[in-house]
Amino acid sequence: MLPVLGLIIGVLIGLLLRDVIVIPAEYSRYLSIGLLVALDSALGGIRSSLLKTFSDRAFVIGLLANLAMASLIVFLGDRLGVDLFLAAVVVFGVRIFNNLSRIRRNLFPLSQGAKDVDLVDGND
Amino acid sequence: MGTTKVSGLKALQRRRLHLSITFIAVVIGFLLVTQLTMVTDIRVQLSDSTPEELALVISDLSRERDQLSQEILEIEGRLGEARSQEQNIRTVMDSAEEAQSALKITTGQGRVEGPGVSIVLIDPLEQVTAYDLLLLVRELMISGVEALAINDKRFVAGVELRQIDGIWLANTPISPPYRVEVIGEPGTIEQALSIRGGITDSLARLDEVSITVNEVPLLELPAAGLAKWRYSQILTNNDEGSEEDAG
Image 1 (cartoon, rainbow over the protein chains, first blue to last red):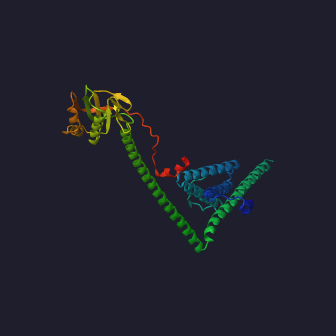
Image 2 (image 1 turned 135 degrees about the horizontal axis):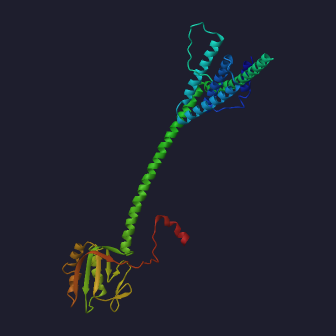
Image 3 (image 1 turned 60 degrees about the vertical axis):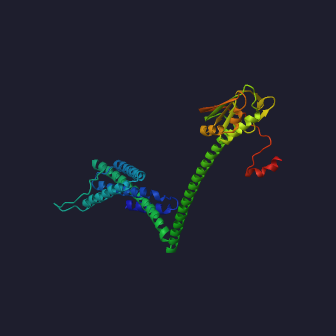
């Protein structure tokens, strides 16, 4: 319940500050990659809580490290004229789906003998 | 006791988890809205415009592009003009330099060298007059001589050759033997001097006067003193207005 409330609060803050915080269009890549990193972290947190391996320190460090790395990749891509941004998008996209599949498997366990496919091993 | 402690720890961990995920959710919500606003703003800017407005934008942009290419053409034209002007200036400079060196030669400013002829006039009885020398000079000038010197004195326009108790050249007396050195085409000069009935012929008829003409491959003539012009002024088109200022 609390995360949903947080999401609503975030949306409200965004709506209230939409005229105050104007981010130039060229930073839209950073914003979208930040969004992906945040989603990945949220799903990773939920997953690890279900697996009972959650550690708030790992969570915060993972979030910050991913954010820094993703921003660096986007920045480098912009500077080099190569769409490295896409690499980050793909990686975080895959991780999101991966986390989602783990969560799903944990909530609805598979019948015995059945196999599920992980896209990429993304545990941290 | 042990179970309470474990459950307390678990509760703390749960709270931390919830807080973390809630924080992340706030961030996600904020980022989501901001990104959406940005993207829709751009879309709205374009989609709000009617086709006419979009057409106007396009035509504005095309006009701007046309103007810019026109400007490029103009600038290139100007560049070409400047280049041709530079070429012109260089040509003018070249001809001016040529004219200047020609003037220097004719006015005797600066020493000159070149192939020519050396004429030695031996006259022990001093029968040759300034007039005879002038005739000789005239003869040489006609034969296309470019520079002339008598007894190591440049003979140019403004230098007088006078007969006052002997021959005076530019206010200094000169005495025989007279050595007339000229720069020019040696063949033509020698030909001009050897004309029967010419000045050399008539000078040679005088008693004990002998004339020897020698071709010299490289002669060096001294410079004349700078001529002073006190009354003459060069007129150019630009000077016409300044006469009154000077007056």
